[in-house]
Picture 1: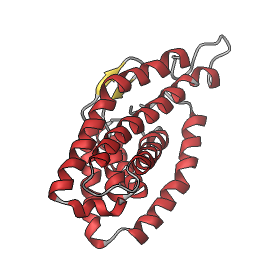
Picture 2 (picture 1 turned 90 degrees about the vertical axis):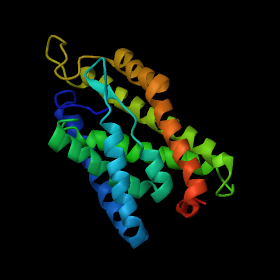
Picture 3 (picture 1 turned 45 degrees about the vertical axis):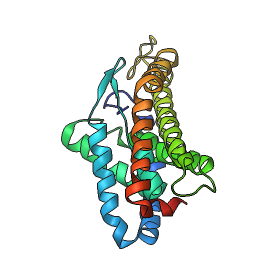
Length: 225
């Protein structure tokens, strides 16, 4: 799902940097106010977890990759704003040090994976697990569904961002200047891989970790009770 350099036009890249700038600022302020000193190590662990799980990339036709993200799990444990910070850190390190995702596309990648994904997943989890006890199996199911839907919404957005490039940026003869694939190719390609494979990886990992924490460290789940 990492968008590389050269696949989004400068207008699109600039737009997502502008969108993400206030989101990063708000997230930083909220995390400073709401995250306790005991939770700071968990934020670092969340960033590391997301970094590691995203490194298992599988190439997808069209120039990008498919992978799990783990952002919904971080959002469930620390809140979506903290997850936004954690995943942003992971994405920036991957882009700058490992070439995984383009530097020009950091704004777009963060919008998809560090903003939309954790927020969608978090509120789906909250809605399904509403008023349930910390050790309820409904929370495990909610976590799995949230992980699955969160990553697929993010994948759909990436597909749309790819697919509109030929419409936004093309030569006089109609040749695409950046991503050459339209929505009819980019969107089903991105969604297909994540609906069939990577969404299930995220769902299973998220559900299993919540199930484990219910038994071993239920205090970590009280924040989202």
